[in-house]
Structure formats: structure tokens, C-alpha cells
Image (cartoon, rainbow, N blue to C red; front, top):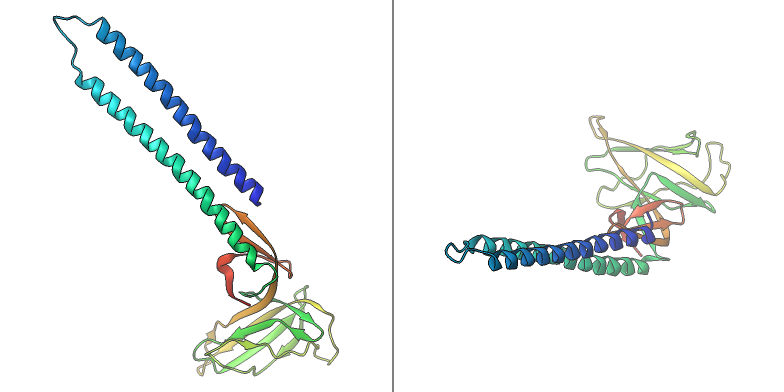
Length: 221
């Protein structure tokens, strides 16, 4: 859903509140008309108990306040949504780091990186093409569990031939001293090309073709 559709939903919600207030106003008029008629034609020797009328009037007043409060909250939500949408615009053109096994290769340089979990003693990488075929295996990768490490791949296959620029997939396997499997994290850098706002959330379209939420961004530069 894009920003236009989101605004349409907000407008519909505001219309519903306005309709509720209009209906409540009609109920007030009916109630007051009925109250006036009953008072006018009541038996003076046996006057009606006004407590019920006061109670009903108070209930109508509470409903009116609730509907009005909801309307104000909807207006506030619309204003906040607009501010969030504008705040995301400053991300356009910036490079962001996200968790992603997919990464890019350009002129022999990759935007992939990884972080080994605590206790890792061996780390191996497999580079796969878009068809899922393993085109390069990198054994004994550098291990530093305290920071993110760039993937040391020169963009070549097993035979030493340079591969075409494009998108590839990184698969890492890590083990500890007892040869137990661990789960490393993989990342990539990409550039924000477009910002979309939908249902209170900013979405970013990246130059890699991926779409992510604001919460998916680990860092930006």
C-alpha cells in the first residue's frame, strides 16, 4: 500500500467520526423533543421522575465526548503520520547497512560483510549465483566476534575467472571448538532510492531492488 492509499484510509476514518457526531446530534434532538412532549403532557398530580431523563442525558453526553475524543485522536494520528513520512525523506541517497544474505558485486568489490558469533573457531563462506549454484567457496575466513568484517572475496570463481557484476547470495557456516554449528550474521550495504509511507510505517526502496522497513536499518551513512 502506498502513501495515497494510506491517506485514503485516514480520510475514511475521519469521515466516519464526522458521521457519528452528526448521528449523535440527531439523537439529542429526538431526546429533547420527547422530553419536552412528556413534560408538557404529564399529569400535574403525578409528575414524572426526572432522574431517568437526567441519566439518559448524561449518557448521551458521555457518548458525545467519546466520539469527539476519537475524532481528535484520528486528527492527531494523521498529523503524526505526516511528520513521520517527511522525516524519512532525509534517508534518500544515503547508504544503509541491513541484514541480508543477498549482496552485490561491482568491479570486483562486494558490499557484503558478516559477524561471527561468540565461540566461533572456524568460518566458511559459499558464494551462490541467482540460480543457487555454488560458484566459490572461501575457507578459514577471518574471525572477529567483536565487530562486522567485510567479506574477503575478489569477485572470482573457483577457476580464477572474474564474474559479472550483479547480485549474489552469501551462505556462511560457523562452528565452535567442539564442532558445534553456530549461526553467523550477514549484512550488506545499499543505497536508499525512495521512501514510502503506509499505515504508520516508513518503507525504503533500495538500489538493490529490496524494500525494507525503517526498523531493518542497522546503520546509515
